[in-house]
Image (cartoon, rainbow, N blue to C red):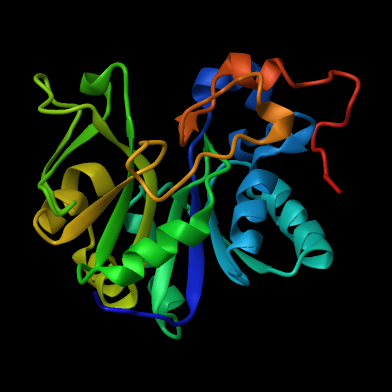
Length: 262
């Protein structure tokens, strides 16, 4: 075990256009859509704050001015400092690393989150797990009922990912990429230097054999799922893509378009 410690920062990827939820996201980005009366991004900021992460960058594209207003409010209310990184044009999940290469300059690890997804995962045991092994990247995994529509990983007995294929026709497992990673600063810089577009297609296959999987919700995992009390009725798995139903089920049309939260 490596016993690594050090400073952790966060990169939240929110560049999606939310076209599948267009009637709900025409004026509010998907990552600010209300879940139980609070913006989805609030859930992720809760996770970061609980893990002691005090600095993060939000890579955004759609309705960038709206997210900048949200960031100003969050910085005034929370013990975390956020910055906006606007993608013009839309860069892609891997290209966002290149655009934010300096984020790792004074960090030891970077937590990277696809923040268009919903989860209230506890990042503390995830970061602790990452620090206990010797590989530069940890990918959070969950078990998908329809694995051929997802990025699928296969692990060996040590938890090392030995294959990864994006949307395979014949999946070798149901272990699905949750869009959440802990990455050593050196590996983060490596990804930033690749100059490619997509994490699942172009980056993660290059880390096969040198990244570990952390299965969230598995009874053998050190992680215990904590579904937020405000969203228990949905019982969504780790990092489920936000659906129209999960948004509208908790959206009060009488409320403002962007809930600020407590």
